[in-house]
Length: 596
Image 1 (cartoon, rainbow, N blue to C red):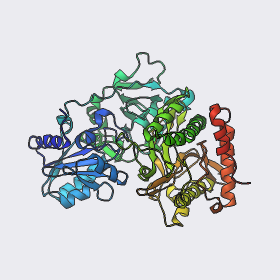
Image 2 (cartoon, rainbow, N blue to C red):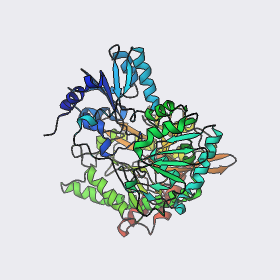
Image 3 (cartoon, helix red, strand yellow):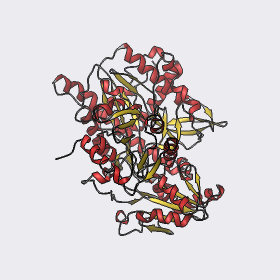
């Protein structure tokens, strides 16, 4: 019989004395601090029942506090036992602050050092030391000790990313990274981010759902020599298509010892936010000097080469055709099904969208778990439908779909808000304001080298004029057949120290969310392009019609109407002849000009 989560807490606490601790920390992170985890690494969900993508649980002898951010404050209360877990805000009241305020004096905190990024470990250690306590790196993972049926580590197949699609050989990439290390006066980089390693070696993988990077670690020195710590069961027997010349393969179990060996007398770069503290400690224990800063691969990778950019453009045409076929199906099917008493539901939408994408021979898989949200569910901006919440689509409130795909040539991410019937003035006013913010970003001309936070307000101005706003970023980077949320570039109100330059791929996604009522978001993927005179603009990669039936046209300027008409003319030109015959009439109607 499966244990309750309260019983699992009890089992975990039964080990405290043998571990010589008063508390343990259980994060959502895996060894790579990734957004998505393999089933083997879903320790937080096993312990607590919480299935969100960010959080951690502090388990003390008498209390258990589950920290989640604002996206999950509703979901966490639906999924967890209120009698066993207290809920705290991951951002507003982070664990290190809670510890300093609430934990007993002299507290001894145990954790798995492979799962905690160095920056978080430093903050926690500082708070615990102020209480006269200490932080202990446990010999194993605390949750693994009580999880007898834990799934095995993933061994997804590794495949090559051909140079004709990558745009640059792995050898040339390694030379660029080595040059950057020399410029940083560093000798060695410890790379823990799978998407950085996949980019560097021109490989892709299938270890974790929605991701295309194999889980592994890598060392690269200032001469370009590479050691790749990867489970070789993932590699094909015939490796001739992989660019592994001068790449030494090593067992991941030897990583920490090898870091200590290589670090002696060296300056070692370790990303404090994206690499576990165990890696930094190994370098220090080996006599190395740790240079805690962002991996140079992260910034190099963010600047897409011409082949990658063309791949993005190509895959967005394929994705636009899938979206258009889906929208035509939905607008035909949903009203008829609702009238017959058999409405379309959120999870069916997810399946249909996936099926339309799968018609493309270059489609690999979904790039993230879709947000398919009807009515009030859309008010939770990172909602995830489940059998328990699988709502019917209704004509009385808009439907929101945020969905993306990995293709052989690139990765997509888009959101559309769709009306299945006439909407209220409140909805239409909010939708128009979101659209105006979206158009403002795409019409904006700004100096090259501008920071994301310097243009974020343009997406919010029309909402602010109504006393409204949205509580998430305006945009994020996207990887090339890679991470759907790629650093380091962001468009957000919070300062981001990385300048927007030509060749950066981002999203633009303003929204508005009325609690218990509806949610609206419009999202395109964009490419920063040269607009002459030292200025840039954000050119749409996404080729999907934007719903016009909720627009208050009188609230748009002539320039906004003209821009939207030009966008739709481009969508129509790209997609005519590519969509299913039954979707052609929808495409023509959906891209008809607003101007008369």
